[in-house]
Image (tube, rainbow, N blue to C red; front, side, top):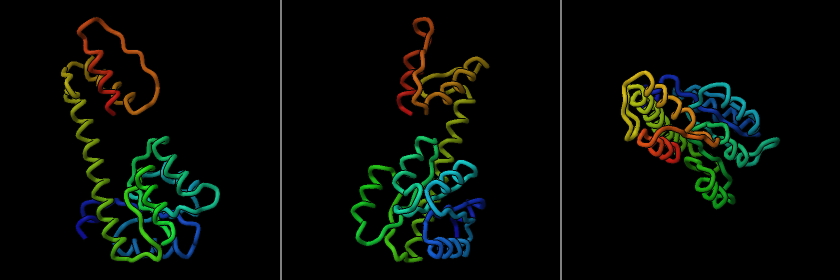
Length: 195
């Protein structure tokens, strides 16, 4: 499979409170060449997402302790960017679609799961994860090369400023930007707003 060849360390986390469903999915996905992790609820899934790199998350919506809705809400708060495939029963399709739009899920999949559909979705999600990682790498490379948006500069001081902006931009913290007129304060502020 082309996707597993391009992502040799691809790992899929499966969060589902039904042990047989969780283990069956893990076995099937391992047979396709992906590494797998499992979690019995959203809390365990979040702990695993924070502890190790995961390429794709497959989650049920209804689980004890922390359900799939809360898990999806927590991902951006924890700065976790991972494509999410939501598992849903037929009667919950409307809920799954709204979850995709409101909480940023990659796609949804009806139970019982069709293996061929899941495999295609996993391949697409892995491609998205690979492209997002490549975009981050290129952004880091640009910031280290002395260019960030409309700002340029190759000195050690400018590279340090670019690095600080990249660290601060994703946060919701208030930042005071000071400097003389014409030094690029507005460019830095705009860069932080556009992240």
